[in-house]
Image (cartoon, rainbow, N blue to C red):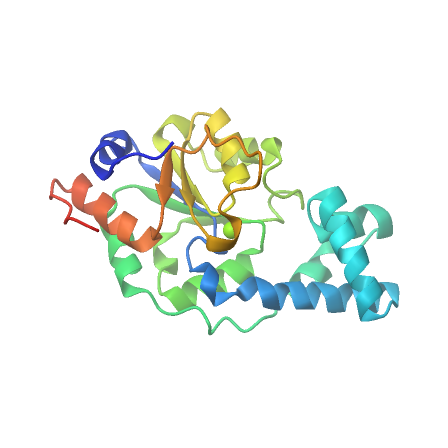
Length: 238
Ligand SMILES: [Mg+2]
């Protein structure tokens, strides 16, 4: 699964399309934006179904477990308009995301196309990337609207992503903090890179054979990758 930086570089030489998950991948999980989204999902469910907060939370988490997202459950069981829901739950404060000029520099030096592939919305991605200062590197955001409201890791939406943006999977890599979301990418011939987060190192029983690269710090890793692509030696890291 994991590999050294040098062999990782050798395995990146063919990459010309860099695909990034957004939340907890392009910015650190410590920013905890999901906590805000989670609270707003609860408030939305409470209002929609006229339930007190504690009962709404049970419904929210029940749909998440049964359908993959709370949104999917609300659409299937309550014919919810997804646009209203998505606008509401992503109306959050993105200032916990710090500007990241080092990431900006690494993305500038990496040759090839860059895209975002998110279970959130284009608007949310644009707000976050504006905070990071990296939005100008990305030619497109493939979001939950583009995926007809079916979230990763549904395999069919990976095909939609590849087709819509004319991506050759054998020359593409996906970066993700949720390891299981890498499996359909691997199955389609993409390289895969898992950005580790403390609270979800891996699910018990996860098969990790589909993870090609393990990343502790995405920014550092991309700086090294850009150096190696440019023929520069990577500095030693502890
Ligand atoms: Mg994520």
